Length: 265
Length: 286
Image 1 (spheres, one colour):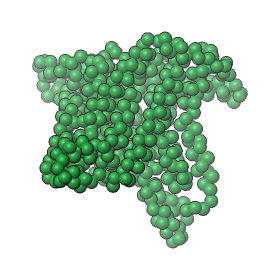
Image 2 (cartoon, chains in turn brown, purple):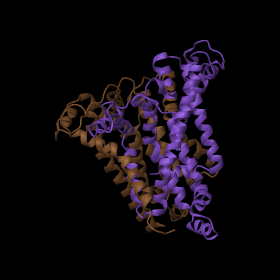
Image 3 (tube, one colour):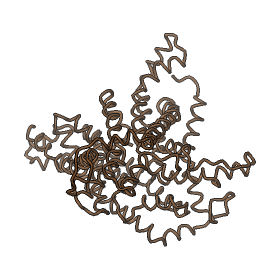
Image 4 (cartoon, one colour):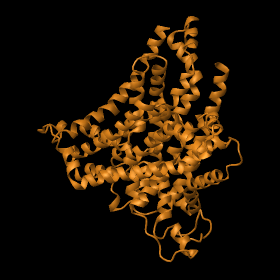
């Protein structure tokens, strides 16, 4: 297999990564570009768009709302999802495949169907649309992602450790709290971060359920429909930086987990 | 051991109940709406009907939207396979930096896709970046008009979902044993033959997994046609939104939504029967 350097493939891959990143680089450039529209050549640096963005009450409120929704959804989903994963992987023997298939639906189905179904459901039982309703739906989506993230990592832990703890006099709850949870903690953290990002980025379900309120994706969408304000560039830059921090955290937690696991198992 | 198992098992209930109430039950209600004539739960007189579905499949207008969505999703899937296969192959077999590159590939994925679509709007519009460059360099005199067409929608969809294709492909190609390829070469196969008969065939699982991850969201896409598309690119999602927010026919809207749901569930079940869901969830872990 090691015959020669794959010149074509290497060039192709570089081009591919350029293709993926070029639009983002473009946004970064225009976030700092002086001058109204998007005209070449560039006119020099400015931070005006940033100050304009931070004076936009609607934009700031959308960020605040998105933070609240993502934080609460991720926290509830991680709590429920952790229990679900331990219970399914280290408890249930029958119907496991069926459970897993059904749990994968929110990940695989078009968000549109989830959003519409939730809209019809909440309107039918006369619960007003808004942030609380968005959280209820985001949690059920995030549970699936928590499960997805944690499943592989919990499989590696043997039941014997839990059994040993119980044999040595621990209660079941004690064995869970002192033996299982510390070992899977990095997986829990990764699940939380993943859920946070899913909820933070979620657009379609939110669009149908948010009513008259606004989240960041909704705000961006409304800006995009009626023109292309450079304020959107500013949001993009901020989100990109924020995202990179989270991705680094997730990967770091994965590494730490690997180290802990190699020590325990 | 058995009490531990029994106690562990109880941990699934809170999540399961939440999931049943806020995910499964809403889907069930959609099913009821699609087979009835009026708003059942508001106490209106209502009866069973297949009329909502008949409308979808008999009225030309709706059939066109359905067909167009399937076509756009299929073209998107085709190009995402074409674009991502060489990259996936390179990552899996030809580099040591694959882990880093895969994480890098997922960075734009985590940045809201509306923002990435916005970038495409900047690129494609009549006085957009590409047109400006083409005119400044004198390659073209007249700006091309591509924004608000189906082509723009497909470009946006391919760009958005191609990374979803790379991941499962990368995962399956990586697992292919190099000695199999070497064996076929030793037995006289040309490099092309070895690639198509061994590598490509063994990577079909990845292609199907990627197809699922690209085709289904593309089929149900709503924001991308709304932002990049025009009147010739209305898709199921835009149609359904219109039914609920403007036309106000929940029964018909539900039937349309259910059609989309059934299409995707059939694809998912079909896939899981043949390959199992393993490749799928492994590739969604990043």
